Amino acid sequence: MDELLTDQQQAEIVRNWLRENGWVILVGLVLGLGGLFGLNEWRDYQASRNSLASQVYEELVNAVLDSRPVRAAELEAQLVGEFARSPYVDQGRLAMAKMHMDRNEAEEAAGYLQRLIDDTDDEGMQRIGSLRLARVRIQQQKYDEAIAALSGIDENSAFAGRYHEVRGDAYYAQGQVEDARREYEAALGTVSSETLNRGLVQVKLDSLGEARPAEPATAESGEPAGTAGDAPPAE
Image: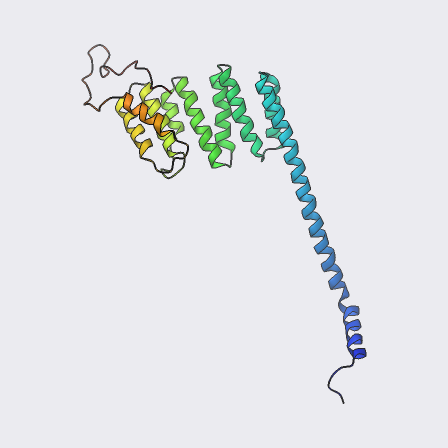
């Protein structure tokens, strides 16, 4: 007997296999096509959501530019409520903080920045929020809060130099010149701070003059002479 199967015999084997196992192929096709269409539908849904979030954010920016704080607040709340995981939420809070600072409403600005810091999953946005919050606290003369907002920075972070710089500004504003000098020097000593304006920091450092021993406290104030009330370095 011929050991090789004829074409007819091979065809019959295939037909029998399909009769017994064809449902496996059918299920695989259904699942495969279903997964493909499901993925496409999910992508379309995400694109639609991003487009809607972008439209709300754009309207928020226009409200900020037109100085319409009530409408801007409504749109920021809509972003948070409907698009909580969107990066437009972070951007919206930065815009709201700027609007309130422009209106001399520092505490309201600080509130938006603190919510950004607390809620964002983006480390870069968190660092930016912390820097801006510290600036707001310095303007409010809440220097300890400004310094606290800038705690815990990784010295290898791209923001390390800016953190040291703003901490230096906070120390200088309250008359702690040597602490300010230490922070400005630390800022210039960082190697990965892409956001640092080294020329400006050097100007601030130079404006402090030469380091000198601490002067004795005056009898009237109990503070080192020549420090209290000094104006902060020029920005």
